[in-house]
Structures are given as C-alpha cells and as structure tokens.
Image (cartoon, rainbow, N blue to C red; front, side):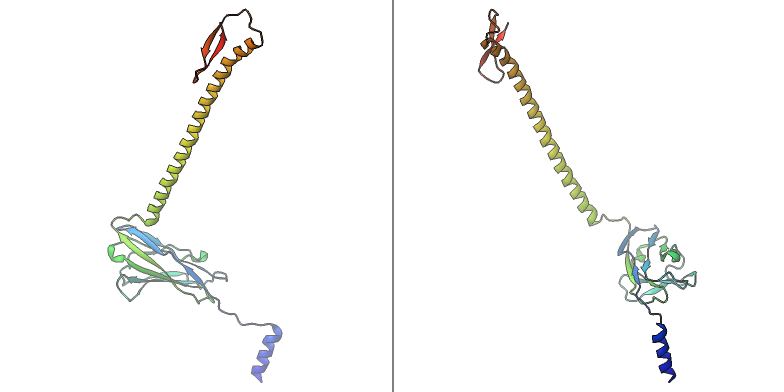
Length: 223
C-alpha cells in the first residue's frame, strides 16, 4: 500500500529521480617530447550538467611493453594527490582547472623510460559514466619530422612552382603584347604620310621611300 502511494505521488507531482548521463573525456592522441624536457598532458570532459564541486580526475600510466597500469595522479575534493611510490612521484604537477573541466598534468624531466600510454578518467557527479581517454607519449633524443610536415612541405613547393609558372606565362604574354603594340604604332606612323600624299596634300614636297619594320614594303615619307 505504501509503495503504491509513493508511486502515485511521483506520477501526480511529476517528481522524477535524477538520472545519470554520460560524460565524454578528451585527451590528445599522441605526444612527442625530448629527453629532459617537460610536457603537458591535457584532459578535459564534456557533460550536460554544471561542473560539480565533487568533480574528480584520475591519471594512470602503462609503460610500453607492459599490460599493467599504475596510478600516478588523482584529484578529488578540491585537492591533488600524486602517487608517492611510482616513477613520477617527484615529476608530476597538476596544472589543470577543475572549474573549467580541465584535468591536465605536467610531467617534468622526461626520460626514455617514460614512453607509454597515459589514461585520464573524469567524473562529474551525477555524471559518472564515460570511457577514459588515452594519450601515448613518445620520448626522443631528437623529435622526428612527422609525415604531415613532409607532406605539407611538398604541397607548398608544388604550389609555389605552379604560381611561378603562371607568373612567367602572363609576363611573357605582356612582353609579347607590348612588342606587337610597339610595331603596330611604328607601322601606322610610317603609313600616315603615304596616306596624305595619296589624298594630294603633299604635292610639291620631296618624298623618300622608307621600309616598314619587319616587312619588305617601302612607303613614302615626307622629307
């Protein structure tokens, strides 16, 4: 009877128990760094709810070639806790902002042995259901040139050559057009006295033949 009354009150008053929704966590996919340098590993999340005061972040680390993960960092209750027994006990610093849903950490003084996968998990109660996100760290003595950089450089060179070819093409067209125009002006200038003579305006004036540039034809020119 009491159960029936409780259910009836929920229906009549529109009281619905608060449901847990999913949370989406984001990290980078792969990071490269040099030996002895520091690197920031970012972690953020998306949730439909306001950021809770009970938000938590947890980081774990799995070395390359190992199946086991170890806990290296945990943030809860407004305080950050670093594992005091692991390989990062003196080298991890919390640089995130929980109020902005940022759980990033800074790993200092990297070494080759730090190569591995770092996984971030976040909870924003009551949103606690979500898949942790992982980022792989590769530590090098010298950072290699990525394939995307090489591809971008090749594309840039090809585009530069195409632009250069177009510029040369239009420059040649301009020079040819200028030469043709110059010859046309000279031809018109040479033919103009002949036209005057044909109309009878140059009677009594001495004329002498002058060749038209680029042809075997001579026209009369006023002396």
